[in-house]
Length: 620
Image 1 (cartoon, rainbow, N blue to C red):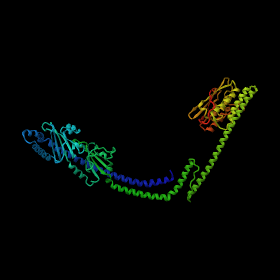
Image 2 (cartoon, rainbow, N blue to C red):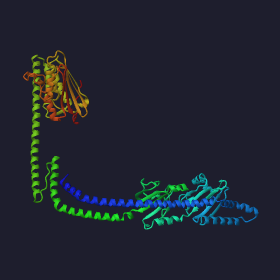
Image 3 (cartoon, rainbow, N blue to C red):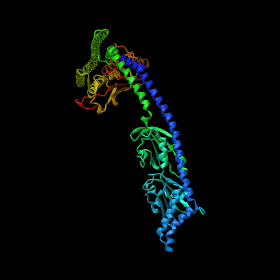
Protein backbone atom coordinates (compact mmCIF):
# COMPACT_ATOMS: atom_id res chain seq x y z
CA UNK A 1 0.00 0.00 0.00
CA UNK A 2 1.30 3.46 -0.90
CA UNK A 3 2.39 5.94 1.75
CA UNK A 4 -0.41 8.34 0.89
CA UNK A 5 -2.98 5.58 1.23
CA UNK A 6 -1.48 4.46 4.53
CA UNK A 7 -1.69 7.98 5.93
CA UNK A 8 -5.23 8.43 4.72
CA UNK A 9 -6.21 4.95 5.92
CA UNK A 10 -4.81 5.63 9.38
CA UNK A 11 -6.70 8.91 9.54
CA UNK A 12 -9.87 7.23 8.29
CA UNK A 13 -9.59 4.21 10.61
CA UNK A 14 -8.66 6.04 13.80
CA UNK A 15 -10.74 9.21 13.41
CA UNK A 16 -13.56 8.93 10.90
CA UNK A 17 -14.54 5.32 11.49
CA UNK A 18 -14.87 5.64 15.30
CA UNK A 19 -17.05 8.71 14.88
CA UNK A 20 -19.16 7.03 12.26
CA UNK A 21 -19.42 3.78 14.21
CA UNK A 22 -20.33 5.60 17.41
CA UNK A 23 -23.08 7.58 15.72
CA UNK A 24 -24.37 4.63 13.70
CA UNK A 25 -24.44 2.25 16.65
CA UNK A 26 -26.15 4.84 18.83
CA UNK A 27 -28.72 5.50 16.13
CA UNK A 28 -29.36 1.81 15.42
CA UNK A 29 -29.60 0.90 19.11
CA UNK A 30 -31.97 3.76 19.77
CA UNK A 31 -33.99 2.81 16.70
CA UNK A 32 -34.09 -0.84 17.70
CA UNK A 33 -35.16 -0.10 21.26
CA UNK A 34 -37.82 2.34 20.07
CA UNK A 35 -39.17 -0.08 17.51
CA UNK A 36 -39.10 -2.98 19.96
CA UNK A 37 -41.02 -1.05 22.60
CA UNK A 38 -43.50 0.22 20.03
CA UNK A 39 -44.06 -3.28 18.61
CA UNK A 40 -44.64 -4.68 22.10
CA UNK A 41 -47.21 -1.99 22.78
CA UNK A 42 -48.73 -2.40 19.34
CA UNK A 43 -49.05 -6.17 19.74
CA UNK A 44 -51.01 -5.66 22.96
CA UNK A 45 -53.24 -3.10 21.26
CA UNK A 46 -53.89 -5.35 18.23
CA UNK A 47 -54.71 -8.30 20.49
CA UNK A 48 -57.16 -6.08 22.35
CA UNK A 49 -58.70 -4.84 19.09
CA UNK A 50 -58.97 -8.44 17.90
CA UNK A 51 -60.84 -9.39 21.07
CA UNK A 52 -63.23 -6.46 20.59
CA UNK A 53 -63.92 -7.48 16.97
CA UNK A 54 -64.43 -11.04 18.15
CA UNK A 55 -66.97 -9.80 20.71
CA UNK A 56 -68.78 -7.73 18.06
CA UNK A 57 -69.16 -10.75 15.76
CA UNK A 58 -70.10 -12.96 18.68
CA UNK A 59 -72.75 -10.45 19.82
CA UNK A 60 -74.19 -10.26 16.30
CA UNK A 61 -74.28 -14.05 16.15
CA UNK A 62 -75.97 -14.18 19.53
CA UNK A 63 -78.82 -11.87 18.52
CA UNK A 64 -79.10 -13.68 15.20
CA UNK A 65 -79.25 -17.03 16.97
CA UNK A 66 -81.84 -15.77 19.46
CA UNK A 67 -84.09 -14.31 16.81
CA UNK A 68 -83.82 -17.19 14.36
CA UNK A 69 -84.35 -19.99 16.90
CA UNK A 70 -87.41 -18.34 18.57
CA UNK A 71 -90.50 -20.33 17.66
CA UNK A 72 -92.80 -17.37 16.98
CA UNK A 73 -90.09 -15.85 14.77
CA UNK A 74 -90.15 -18.95 12.61
CA UNK A 75 -93.91 -18.89 12.56
CA UNK A 76 -93.93 -15.23 11.56
CA UNK A 77 -91.66 -16.10 8.68
CA UNK A 78 -93.96 -18.90 7.62
CA UNK A 79 -96.95 -16.65 7.93
CA UNK A 80 -95.20 -13.89 5.98
CA UNK A 81 -94.30 -16.29 3.23
CA UNK A 82 -97.73 -18.04 3.08
CA UNK A 83 -100.02 -15.17 3.95
CA UNK A 84 -100.49 -13.93 0.43
CA UNK A 85 -102.19 -17.10 -0.80
CA UNK A 86 -104.35 -17.55 2.31
CA UNK A 87 -105.65 -13.98 2.27
CA UNK A 88 -106.36 -14.15 -1.40
CA UNK A 89 -108.53 -17.18 -0.79
CA UNK A 90 -110.47 -15.40 1.98
CA UNK A 91 -111.03 -12.30 -0.12
CA UNK A 92 -108.80 -9.97 1.93
CA UNK A 93 -106.31 -7.64 0.28
CA UNK A 94 -102.93 -9.49 0.27
CA UNK A 95 -101.01 -6.22 -0.06
CA UNK A 96 -102.42 -4.87 3.21
CA UNK A 97 -101.69 -8.14 5.00
CA UNK A 98 -98.09 -8.16 3.71
CA UNK A 99 -97.64 -4.62 4.98
CA UNK A 100 -98.78 -5.66 8.44
CA UNK A 101 -96.47 -8.66 8.52
CA UNK A 102 -93.53 -6.57 7.40
CA UNK A 103 -94.23 -4.08 10.18
CA UNK A 104 -94.27 -6.88 12.79
CA UNK A 105 -91.05 -8.35 11.41
CA UNK A 106 -89.35 -4.94 11.35
CA UNK A 107 -90.24 -4.26 14.98
CA UNK A 108 -88.85 -7.64 16.02
CA UNK A 109 -85.61 -7.05 14.12
CA UNK A 110 -85.05 -3.55 15.54
CA UNK A 111 -85.70 -4.68 19.07
CA UNK A 112 -83.24 -7.55 18.59
CA UNK A 113 -80.13 -5.70 17.29
CA UNK A 114 -80.09 -2.07 16.08
CA UNK A 115 -77.05 -2.68 13.82
CA UNK A 116 -79.12 -4.84 11.49
CA UNK A 117 -79.92 -2.88 8.33
CA UNK A 118 -81.77 -5.52 6.33
CA UNK A 119 -83.11 -9.03 6.66
CA UNK A 120 -84.01 -11.22 3.72
CA UNK A 121 -85.78 -14.57 4.09
CA UNK A 122 -85.68 -17.02 1.19
CA UNK A 123 -88.29 -19.72 1.70
CA UNK A 124 -87.82 -23.23 0.43
CA UNK A 125 -90.93 -22.74 -1.69
CA UNK A 126 -89.16 -19.91 -3.59
CA UNK A 127 -90.91 -16.99 -1.87
CA UNK A 128 -88.85 -14.06 -0.50
CA UNK A 129 -89.57 -11.69 2.40
CA UNK A 130 -87.32 -8.63 2.81
CA UNK A 131 -87.17 -6.13 5.68
CA UNK A 132 -84.83 -3.17 5.22
CA UNK A 133 -84.09 0.07 7.02
CA UNK A 134 -81.91 1.56 4.29
CA UNK A 135 -82.18 1.25 0.53
CA UNK A 136 -80.96 -2.31 0.01
CA UNK A 137 -82.23 -4.60 -2.71
CA UNK A 138 -82.14 -8.35 -1.91
CA UNK A 139 -80.11 -10.69 -4.11
CA UNK A 140 -82.27 -12.91 -6.35
CA UNK A 141 -82.42 -16.45 -5.04
CA UNK A 142 -81.08 -17.85 -8.33
CA UNK A 143 -77.87 -15.81 -8.04
CA UNK A 144 -77.50 -16.69 -4.38
CA UNK A 145 -77.70 -20.37 -5.18
CA UNK A 146 -74.95 -20.08 -7.84
CA UNK A 147 -72.58 -18.28 -5.45
CA UNK A 148 -69.61 -20.41 -4.22
CA UNK A 149 -70.47 -19.58 -0.59
CA UNK A 150 -73.97 -21.03 -0.90
CA UNK A 151 -72.61 -24.58 -0.64
CA UNK A 152 -70.71 -23.61 2.51
CA UNK A 153 -73.92 -22.19 4.04
CA UNK A 154 -75.83 -25.40 3.35
CA UNK A 155 -72.95 -27.46 4.73
CA UNK A 156 -73.00 -25.58 8.03
CA UNK A 157 -76.79 -26.19 8.30
CA UNK A 158 -77.73 -23.26 10.52
CA UNK A 159 -74.29 -21.96 11.58
CA UNK A 160 -73.59 -18.45 10.27
CA UNK A 161 -71.26 -17.58 7.41
CA UNK A 162 -69.91 -14.00 7.37
CA UNK A 163 -68.88 -11.98 4.32
CA UNK A 164 -67.02 -8.75 4.88
CA UNK A 165 -67.68 -5.62 2.80
CA UNK A 166 -66.23 -5.83 -0.72
CA UNK A 167 -65.36 -9.54 -0.33
CA UNK A 168 -68.33 -10.36 -2.55
CA UNK A 169 -70.28 -7.31 -3.74
CA UNK A 170 -73.28 -9.39 -4.82
CA UNK A 171 -73.73 -10.75 -1.31
CA UNK A 172 -72.88 -7.56 0.63
CA UNK A 173 -75.31 -5.40 -1.39
CA UNK A 174 -75.03 -1.96 -2.81
CA UNK A 175 -74.02 -0.50 0.60
CA UNK A 176 -71.21 -3.06 1.08
CA UNK A 177 -72.26 -4.09 4.60
CA UNK A 178 -71.12 -6.95 6.79
CA UNK A 179 -73.36 -9.81 5.71
CA UNK A 180 -74.38 -12.97 7.55
CA UNK A 181 -75.94 -15.92 5.71
CA UNK A 182 -77.36 -19.00 7.41
CA UNK A 183 -79.92 -21.74 7.03
CA UNK A 184 -83.25 -20.99 8.83
CA UNK A 185 -84.22 -24.04 10.91
CA UNK A 186 -87.50 -25.14 12.51
CA UNK A 187 -86.87 -25.09 16.28
CA UNK A 188 -88.86 -28.30 16.81
CA UNK A 189 -87.80 -30.44 13.87
CA UNK A 190 -84.51 -28.72 12.96
CA UNK A 191 -85.59 -28.93 9.37
CA UNK A 192 -84.57 -26.22 6.92
CA UNK A 193 -87.23 -23.57 6.36
CA UNK A 194 -85.13 -21.45 4.00
CA UNK A 195 -82.11 -19.13 3.86
CA UNK A 196 -81.69 -16.05 6.05
CA UNK A 197 -79.48 -13.13 4.88
CA UNK A 198 -78.80 -10.36 7.43
CA UNK A 199 -76.73 -7.25 6.68
CA UNK A 200 -75.06 -5.33 9.51
CA UNK A 201 -73.58 -1.87 9.76
CA UNK A 202 -70.68 -2.17 12.23
CA UNK A 203 -70.49 1.42 13.52
CA UNK A 204 -68.67 0.07 16.56
CA UNK A 205 -65.58 -0.47 14.39
CA UNK A 206 -65.19 3.28 13.83
CA UNK A 207 -65.49 4.00 17.54
CA UNK A 208 -63.09 1.13 18.34
CA UNK A 209 -60.32 2.27 15.99
CA UNK A 210 -60.78 5.95 16.87
CA UNK A 211 -60.20 5.01 20.51
CA UNK A 212 -56.93 3.18 19.77
CA UNK A 213 -55.75 5.74 17.23
CA UNK A 214 -55.81 8.70 19.60
CA UNK A 215 -52.86 11.03 19.00
CA UNK A 216 -51.74 9.44 15.71
CA UNK A 217 -54.67 9.94 13.35
CA UNK A 218 -52.47 11.25 10.56
CA UNK A 219 -49.66 8.71 11.01
CA UNK A 220 -51.38 5.41 11.77
CA UNK A 221 -54.22 3.54 10.12
CA UNK A 222 -55.99 0.25 10.75
CA UNK A 223 -57.11 -2.18 8.07
CA UNK A 224 -59.21 -5.31 8.08
CA UNK A 225 -58.06 -7.59 5.26
CA UNK A 226 -60.36 -10.39 4.16
CA UNK A 227 -60.40 -13.11 1.53
CA UNK A 228 -57.77 -12.80 -1.22
CA UNK A 229 -56.23 -9.71 0.40
CA UNK A 230 -59.33 -7.54 -0.07
CA UNK A 231 -59.48 -4.61 2.36
CA UNK A 232 -62.92 -4.82 4.03
CA UNK A 233 -62.36 -1.91 6.40
CA UNK A 234 -59.96 1.05 6.38
CA UNK A 235 -59.83 3.61 9.17
CA UNK A 236 -58.37 6.01 6.60
CA UNK A 237 -61.47 5.51 4.39
CA UNK A 238 -59.50 5.28 1.12
CA UNK A 239 -58.50 1.63 0.62
CA UNK A 240 -61.77 -0.18 1.34
CA UNK A 241 -62.48 -2.60 -1.47
CA UNK A 242 -58.93 -2.56 -2.85
CA UNK A 243 -56.30 -5.29 -2.69
CA UNK A 244 -53.84 -4.94 0.16
CA UNK A 245 -50.92 -6.48 -1.78
CA UNK A 246 -51.17 -3.83 -4.52
CA UNK A 247 -50.17 -1.11 -2.04
CA UNK A 248 -47.73 -2.98 0.23
CA UNK A 249 -44.31 -4.06 -0.99
CA UNK A 250 -44.36 -7.27 1.02
CA UNK A 251 -41.84 -9.09 -1.24
CA UNK A 252 -42.42 -12.27 0.75
CA UNK A 253 -41.46 -10.64 4.04
CA UNK A 254 -44.94 -10.51 5.57
CA UNK A 255 -47.35 -13.40 6.11
CA UNK A 256 -50.99 -12.41 6.76
CA UNK A 257 -51.63 -15.77 8.36
CA UNK A 258 -49.21 -15.13 11.25
CA UNK A 259 -50.64 -14.52 14.73
CA UNK A 260 -48.39 -11.44 14.91
CA UNK A 261 -45.65 -10.17 12.63
CA UNK A 262 -44.13 -6.78 11.91
CA UNK A 263 -41.91 -5.53 9.09
CA UNK A 264 -40.56 -2.30 7.66
CA UNK A 265 -41.66 -1.79 4.05
CA UNK A 266 -43.11 0.61 1.50
CA UNK A 267 -46.86 1.19 1.82
CA UNK A 268 -48.65 3.60 -0.52
CA UNK A 269 -45.21 4.76 -1.66
CA UNK A 270 -43.98 5.68 1.81
CA UNK A 271 -41.76 3.79 4.24
CA UNK A 272 -43.91 2.36 7.00
CA UNK A 273 -43.94 -0.18 9.79
CA UNK A 274 -46.61 -2.73 8.84
CA UNK A 275 -47.86 -5.07 11.57
CA UNK A 276 -50.32 -7.93 11.03
CA UNK A 277 -52.45 -9.89 13.47
CA UNK A 278 -54.47 -12.79 12.10
CA UNK A 279 -57.95 -12.93 13.68
CA UNK A 280 -57.96 -16.68 13.80
CA UNK A 281 -60.27 -16.84 16.82
CA UNK A 282 -63.25 -15.41 14.95
CA UNK A 283 -63.11 -17.99 12.13
CA UNK A 284 -65.08 -20.33 14.36
CA UNK A 285 -67.79 -17.65 14.44
CA UNK A 286 -68.25 -17.99 10.68
CA UNK A 287 -65.95 -15.32 9.26
CA UNK A 288 -63.36 -15.82 6.58
CA UNK A 289 -59.60 -15.59 7.07
CA UNK A 290 -59.60 -11.99 8.35
CA UNK A 291 -56.43 -10.16 9.36
CA UNK A 292 -55.99 -6.94 11.32
CA UNK A 293 -53.26 -4.73 9.81
CA UNK A 294 -51.72 -1.64 11.42
CA UNK A 295 -49.71 0.73 9.22
CA UNK A 296 -47.55 3.28 11.05
CA UNK A 297 -45.59 5.97 9.22
CA UNK A 298 -41.86 5.33 9.70
CA UNK A 299 -41.02 9.03 10.05
CA UNK A 300 -43.52 9.24 12.90
CA UNK A 301 -41.59 6.50 14.74
CA UNK A 302 -38.09 7.76 13.95
CA UNK A 303 -38.57 11.50 14.27
CA UNK A 304 -36.28 11.82 17.31
CA UNK A 305 -33.84 9.33 15.84
CA UNK A 306 -33.52 11.39 12.68
CA UNK A 307 -32.54 14.43 14.71
CA UNK A 308 -29.87 12.41 16.51
CA UNK A 309 -28.58 11.10 13.20
CA UNK A 310 -28.46 14.63 11.79
CA UNK A 311 -26.26 15.75 14.69
CA UNK A 312 -23.97 12.76 14.22
CA UNK A 313 -23.66 13.38 10.47
CA UNK A 314 -23.00 17.07 11.04
CA UNK A 315 -20.24 16.42 13.57
CA UNK A 316 -18.67 13.78 11.32
CA UNK A 317 -18.66 16.08 8.29
CA UNK A 318 -17.10 18.91 10.32
CA UNK A 319 -14.37 16.60 11.61
CA UNK A 320 -13.70 15.30 8.14
CA UNK A 321 -13.44 18.82 6.70
CA UNK A 322 -10.88 19.83 9.36
CA UNK A 323 -8.85 16.71 8.76
CA UNK A 324 -8.87 17.21 4.99
CA UNK A 325 -7.64 20.77 5.36
CA UNK A 326 -4.79 19.53 7.54
CA UNK A 327 -4.02 16.79 5.04
CA UNK A 328 -3.88 19.21 2.10
CA UNK A 329 -1.75 21.79 3.89
CA UNK A 330 0.85 19.66 5.66
CA UNK A 331 0.78 16.01 4.65
CA UNK A 332 -0.23 15.75 1.04
CA UNK A 333 2.71 17.64 -0.48
CA UNK A 334 5.30 15.49 1.29
CA UNK A 335 3.47 12.24 0.68
CA UNK A 336 3.00 12.99 -3.02
CA UNK A 337 6.75 13.30 -3.48
CA UNK A 338 7.31 9.83 -2.09
CA UNK A 339 4.37 8.50 -4.07
CA UNK A 340 5.81 9.85 -7.33
CA UNK A 341 9.16 8.21 -6.65
CA UNK A 342 7.52 4.91 -5.67
CA UNK A 343 5.37 4.96 -8.83
CA UNK A 344 8.41 5.65 -10.97
CA UNK A 345 10.25 2.75 -9.33
CA UNK A 346 7.37 0.41 -10.17
CA UNK A 347 7.47 1.52 -13.81
CA UNK A 348 11.22 0.92 -13.92
CA UNK A 349 10.66 -2.50 -12.37
CA UNK A 350 8.28 -3.31 -15.23
CA UNK A 351 11.04 -2.38 -17.70
CA UNK A 352 10.33 1.27 -18.55
CA UNK A 353 13.79 2.83 -18.24
CA UNK A 354 12.61 6.12 -19.78
CA UNK A 355 10.84 6.97 -16.52
CA UNK A 356 11.94 10.17 -14.82
CA UNK A 357 10.66 11.87 -11.65
CA UNK A 358 9.74 15.57 -12.03
CA UNK A 359 12.07 17.73 -9.93
CA UNK A 360 10.04 20.43 -8.17
CA UNK A 361 10.44 22.38 -4.93
CA UNK A 362 13.52 23.11 -2.84
CA UNK A 363 13.36 20.61 0.03
CA UNK A 364 14.95 17.22 0.71
CA UNK A 365 12.63 15.45 -1.74
CA UNK A 366 14.50 17.16 -4.62
CA UNK A 367 17.67 15.24 -3.68
CA UNK A 368 15.71 12.00 -3.75
CA UNK A 369 14.24 12.77 -7.20
CA UNK A 370 17.62 13.76 -8.72
CA UNK A 371 19.33 10.68 -7.30
CA UNK A 372 16.63 8.41 -8.69
CA UNK A 373 16.84 9.98 -12.17
CA UNK A 374 20.64 9.60 -12.23
CA UNK A 375 20.41 5.97 -11.14
CA UNK A 376 17.84 5.06 -13.81
CA UNK A 377 19.88 6.79 -16.52
CA UNK A 378 23.01 4.85 -15.52
CA UNK A 379 21.11 1.53 -15.41
CA UNK A 380 19.68 2.22 -18.86
CA UNK A 381 23.19 2.86 -20.26
CA UNK A 382 24.56 -0.33 -18.71
CA UNK A 383 21.63 -2.40 -19.98
CA UNK A 384 22.08 -1.11 -23.53
CA UNK A 385 25.75 -2.00 -23.35
CA UNK A 386 24.95 -5.54 -22.13
CA UNK A 387 22.40 -6.02 -24.93
CA UNK A 388 24.91 -4.94 -27.55
CA UNK A 389 27.52 -7.28 -26.09
CA UNK A 390 25.13 -10.22 -26.09
CA UNK A 391 24.23 -9.62 -29.71
CA UNK A 392 27.90 -9.58 -30.69
CA UNK A 393 28.54 -12.75 -28.68
CA UNK A 394 25.60 -14.61 -30.23
CA UNK A 395 26.64 -13.61 -33.74
CA UNK A 396 30.24 -14.72 -33.09
CA UNK A 397 29.07 -18.08 -31.74
CA UNK A 398 26.84 -18.67 -34.74
CA UNK A 399 29.63 -17.80 -37.18
CA UNK A 400 32.06 -20.05 -35.29
CA UNK A 401 29.68 -23.01 -35.30
CA UNK A 402 28.94 -22.64 -39.00
CA UNK A 403 32.69 -22.31 -39.69
CA UNK A 404 33.18 -25.65 -37.94
CA UNK A 405 30.70 -27.27 -40.29
CA UNK A 406 31.89 -26.12 -43.72
CA UNK A 407 35.47 -27.59 -43.67
CA UNK A 408 34.15 -31.10 -42.94
CA UNK A 409 31.83 -31.04 -45.93
CA UNK A 410 34.62 -30.06 -48.27
CA UNK A 411 37.19 -32.43 -46.79
CA UNK A 412 35.03 -35.54 -46.96
CA UNK A 413 33.66 -34.79 -50.44
CA UNK A 414 37.06 -34.06 -52.00
CA UNK A 415 38.50 -37.20 -50.48
CA UNK A 416 35.72 -39.23 -52.13
CA UNK A 417 36.25 -37.55 -55.52
CA UNK A 418 39.96 -38.18 -55.29
CA UNK A 419 39.42 -41.88 -54.72
CA UNK A 420 37.11 -42.13 -57.74
CA UNK A 421 39.55 -40.16 -59.90
CA UNK A 422 42.33 -42.52 -59.00
CA UNK A 423 40.10 -45.40 -60.10
CA UNK A 424 39.46 -43.55 -63.36
CA UNK A 425 35.68 -43.54 -62.91
CA UNK A 426 34.87 -40.33 -64.79
CA UNK A 427 31.08 -40.67 -64.80
CA UNK A 428 30.98 -41.14 -61.06
CA UNK A 429 33.37 -38.21 -60.67
CA UNK A 430 30.94 -36.07 -62.70
CA UNK A 431 28.01 -37.04 -60.52
CA UNK A 432 30.08 -36.49 -57.41
CA UNK A 433 31.06 -33.01 -58.57
CA UNK A 434 27.41 -32.25 -59.41
CA UNK A 435 26.30 -33.33 -55.92
CA UNK A 436 29.15 -31.35 -54.37
CA UNK A 437 27.99 -28.29 -56.30
CA UNK A 438 24.48 -28.73 -54.86
CA UNK A 439 25.99 -28.89 -51.40
CA UNK A 440 28.03 -25.73 -51.88
CA UNK A 441 25.13 -23.87 -53.49
CA UNK A 442 23.15 -24.28 -50.28
CA UNK A 443 26.13 -23.79 -47.97
CA UNK A 444 27.13 -20.43 -49.40
CA UNK A 445 23.63 -18.93 -49.02
CA UNK A 446 23.64 -15.98 -46.61
CA UNK A 447 20.32 -16.92 -45.05
CA UNK A 448 20.48 -18.85 -41.78
CA UNK A 449 17.19 -20.63 -42.51
CA UNK A 450 16.23 -22.45 -45.71
CA UNK A 451 13.21 -24.48 -46.79
CA UNK A 452 13.04 -28.09 -45.68
CA UNK A 453 13.01 -29.29 -49.30
CA UNK A 454 16.35 -27.45 -49.85
CA UNK A 455 17.81 -29.02 -46.70
CA UNK A 456 16.69 -32.44 -47.95
CA UNK A 457 18.32 -31.78 -51.37
CA UNK A 458 21.55 -30.98 -49.56
CA UNK A 459 21.18 -34.15 -47.46
CA UNK A 460 20.47 -36.37 -50.47
CA UNK A 461 23.50 -34.94 -52.31
CA UNK A 462 25.71 -35.75 -49.33
CA UNK A 463 24.32 -39.28 -48.96
CA UNK A 464 24.81 -40.04 -52.66
CA UNK A 465 28.43 -38.81 -52.45
CA UNK A 466 28.99 -41.15 -49.49
CA UNK A 467 27.23 -43.90 -51.38
CA UNK A 468 29.86 -43.62 -54.12
CA UNK A 469 32.56 -43.99 -51.47
CA UNK A 470 31.00 -46.85 -49.50
CA UNK A 471 28.90 -48.79 -51.97
CA UNK A 472 28.22 -51.84 -49.83
CA UNK A 473 28.31 -50.15 -46.45
CA UNK A 474 24.77 -48.70 -46.10
CA UNK A 475 21.49 -47.72 -47.71
CA UNK A 476 19.27 -44.77 -46.86
CA UNK A 477 15.61 -43.72 -46.88
CA UNK A 478 14.11 -40.21 -46.65
CA UNK A 479 10.44 -39.93 -45.70
CA UNK A 480 9.13 -36.37 -45.20
CA UNK A 481 5.47 -35.37 -45.83
CA UNK A 482 4.76 -32.99 -48.70
CA UNK A 483 2.91 -30.63 -46.32
CA UNK A 484 6.15 -29.86 -44.44
CA UNK A 485 8.43 -29.14 -47.39
CA UNK A 486 7.57 -25.43 -47.47
CA UNK A 487 8.44 -24.96 -43.79
CA UNK A 488 11.82 -23.62 -42.76
CA UNK A 489 14.79 -25.10 -40.91
CA UNK A 490 18.22 -23.91 -39.85
CA UNK A 491 20.50 -24.93 -42.71
CA UNK A 492 23.08 -27.68 -42.30
CA UNK A 493 21.12 -29.37 -39.50
CA UNK A 494 20.41 -32.88 -40.79
CA UNK A 495 23.60 -33.60 -42.77
CA UNK A 496 25.98 -33.54 -39.74
CA UNK A 497 23.75 -36.07 -37.94
CA UNK A 498 23.77 -38.46 -40.93
CA UNK A 499 27.52 -37.96 -41.39
CA UNK A 500 28.26 -39.08 -37.86
CA UNK A 501 26.03 -42.13 -38.29
CA UNK A 502 28.09 -43.17 -41.34
CA UNK A 503 31.51 -42.40 -39.88
CA UNK A 504 30.91 -43.79 -36.41
CA UNK A 505 27.71 -45.80 -36.21
CA UNK A 506 28.70 -48.22 -39.00
CA UNK A 507 32.31 -48.62 -37.81
CA UNK A 508 33.34 -52.27 -38.07
CA UNK A 509 29.88 -53.72 -38.82
CA UNK A 510 29.59 -56.90 -40.95
CA UNK A 511 26.05 -56.26 -42.12
CA UNK A 512 24.28 -53.68 -44.30
CA UNK A 513 23.78 -50.39 -42.47
CA UNK A 514 20.51 -48.56 -42.78
CA UNK A 515 19.79 -44.88 -42.31
CA UNK A 516 16.24 -43.56 -42.19
CA UNK A 517 15.36 -39.83 -42.05
CA UNK A 518 11.69 -39.07 -41.32
CA UNK A 519 9.64 -36.10 -40.14
CA UNK A 520 6.25 -35.48 -38.54
CA UNK A 521 4.22 -32.58 -37.27
CA UNK A 522 3.63 -32.58 -33.46
CA UNK A 523 1.54 -29.61 -32.30
CA UNK A 524 3.36 -26.40 -33.17
CA UNK A 525 6.64 -28.24 -33.77
CA UNK A 526 8.26 -30.28 -36.53
CA UNK A 527 10.18 -33.35 -35.38
CA UNK A 528 12.88 -35.08 -37.46
CA UNK A 529 14.08 -38.59 -36.64
CA UNK A 530 17.54 -39.79 -37.85
CA UNK A 531 17.73 -43.55 -37.22
CA UNK A 532 20.54 -46.03 -37.87
CA UNK A 533 21.15 -49.68 -37.06
CA UNK A 534 24.78 -49.13 -36.16
CA UNK A 535 26.89 -50.14 -33.17
CA UNK A 536 25.12 -47.73 -30.79
CA UNK A 537 26.60 -45.57 -28.06
CA UNK A 538 27.76 -46.97 -24.71
CA UNK A 539 25.77 -45.91 -21.68
CA UNK A 540 28.59 -43.93 -19.95
CA UNK A 541 29.07 -41.81 -23.07
CA UNK A 542 25.28 -41.20 -23.27
CA UNK A 543 25.36 -39.90 -19.72
CA UNK A 544 28.31 -37.69 -20.65
CA UNK A 545 26.34 -36.16 -23.55
CA UNK A 546 23.27 -35.62 -21.37
CA UNK A 547 25.39 -33.68 -18.88
CA UNK A 548 26.91 -31.54 -21.64
CA UNK A 549 30.39 -33.06 -21.32
CA UNK A 550 30.49 -34.46 -24.85
CA UNK A 551 30.02 -32.20 -27.84
CA UNK A 552 31.21 -34.51 -30.63
CA UNK A 553 30.37 -38.04 -31.62
CA UNK A 554 34.11 -38.86 -31.45
CA UNK A 555 33.80 -38.35 -27.71
CA UNK A 556 30.62 -40.41 -27.60
CA UNK A 557 32.25 -43.30 -29.49
CA UNK A 558 35.50 -42.90 -27.53
CA UNK A 559 37.55 -42.16 -30.64
CA UNK A 560 40.40 -39.72 -30.95
CA UNK A 561 40.11 -36.58 -33.02
CA UNK A 562 43.27 -37.37 -34.93
CA UNK A 563 41.76 -40.15 -37.05
CA UNK A 564 41.80 -38.03 -40.20
CA UNK A 565 38.58 -38.17 -42.16
CA UNK A 566 36.66 -39.43 -39.19
CA UNK A 567 36.57 -36.01 -37.57
CA UNK A 568 32.89 -35.21 -37.73
CA UNK A 569 30.80 -32.30 -36.56
CA UNK A 570 29.67 -32.94 -32.98
CA UNK A 571 25.99 -33.35 -32.21
CA UNK A 572 26.62 -31.02 -29.30
CA UNK A 573 27.52 -28.25 -31.74
CA UNK A 574 24.37 -28.91 -33.79
CA UNK A 575 22.37 -28.86 -30.59
CA UNK A 576 23.94 -25.54 -29.60
CA UNK A 577 23.13 -24.02 -32.98
CA UNK A 578 19.49 -25.04 -32.70
CA UNK A 579 19.10 -23.73 -29.15
CA UNK A 580 20.86 -20.44 -29.90
CA UNK A 581 18.69 -19.90 -32.96
CA UNK A 582 15.29 -21.21 -31.75
CA UNK A 583 15.51 -21.06 -27.98
CA UNK A 584 15.98 -23.49 -25.08
CA UNK A 585 12.82 -25.47 -25.85
CA UNK A 586 14.29 -26.92 -29.06
CA UNK A 587 17.31 -29.03 -30.06
CA UNK A 588 18.40 -32.69 -30.12
CA UNK A 589 17.44 -35.74 -28.07
CA UNK A 590 19.54 -38.92 -28.31
CA UNK A 591 18.30 -42.45 -27.72
CA UNK A 592 20.88 -45.22 -28.09
CA UNK A 593 22.11 -48.46 -26.57
CA UNK A 594 25.27 -50.42 -27.32
CA UNK A 595 24.65 -52.82 -30.21
CA UNK A 596 21.08 -51.51 -30.76
CA UNK A 597 21.65 -48.54 -33.05
CA UNK A 598 20.92 -44.84 -32.47
CA UNK A 599 17.91 -42.54 -32.88
CA UNK A 600 18.41 -38.79 -32.88
CA UNK A 601 15.27 -36.65 -32.46
CA UNK A 602 15.52 -33.08 -33.76
CA UNK A 603 12.78 -30.64 -32.63
CA UNK A 604 12.28 -27.26 -34.35
CA UNK A 605 9.33 -24.80 -34.37
CA UNK A 606 6.95 -24.89 -37.30
CA UNK A 607 7.40 -21.80 -39.48
CA UNK A 608 6.72 -21.15 -43.15
CA UNK A 609 7.48 -18.51 -45.72
CA UNK A 610 4.49 -18.24 -48.06
CA UNK A 611 6.60 -16.72 -50.83
CA UNK A 612 8.80 -19.82 -51.01
CA UNK A 613 7.28 -22.56 -53.20
CA UNK A 614 8.71 -26.08 -52.88
CA UNK A 615 10.56 -27.11 -55.99
CA UNK A 616 9.91 -30.82 -55.56
CA UNK A 617 8.91 -33.34 -52.91
CA UNK A 618 11.02 -35.98 -51.25
CA UNK A 619 9.95 -39.44 -50.22
CA UNK A 620 11.69 -42.63 -49.22
